[in-house]
Image (cartoon, rainbow, N blue to C red; front, side, top):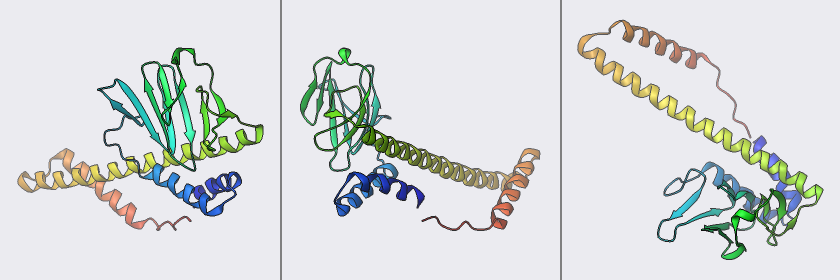
Length: 205
């Protein structure tokens, strides 16, 4: 798969242990294609009403609040950010006392090797080469997310058409097709015929 090779090129450049790199790449792809939205905000944050706090955790973090902006990729271990009032904790360590004092986003690397584009003070600034490689990986993650979303939308549209066809057949079986139903049937029949005639696409590796 082209996306896999593009991701691996960046991952392998940053990791000396190939086995670790392969596991990290697999974890990233599982996160991208297997996101579970249960009890999770659209931006990936988990809300704790009792403490009036918001928490984000995972190998890929991407969110923006009123003051905090984060895009992070951690190949080795998940990262956890907790925002409570104006304070920010990274992996249970206080890194920001007042979010209103945060400035512009920077490209940074944590002590654990995690890579960040954020206005939080994490680790050190990236070198020019590190920044260039991170941007490549960041763009690839965004591209795969878009492809994943398109796949979900296409699947939903296929399911909707199947339901419409089923409901249309039920209605027609009772009273016969009206003008709009006949038009719909002609359209769906034409779609089915064009799909059956189109040559199968070879799988991408």
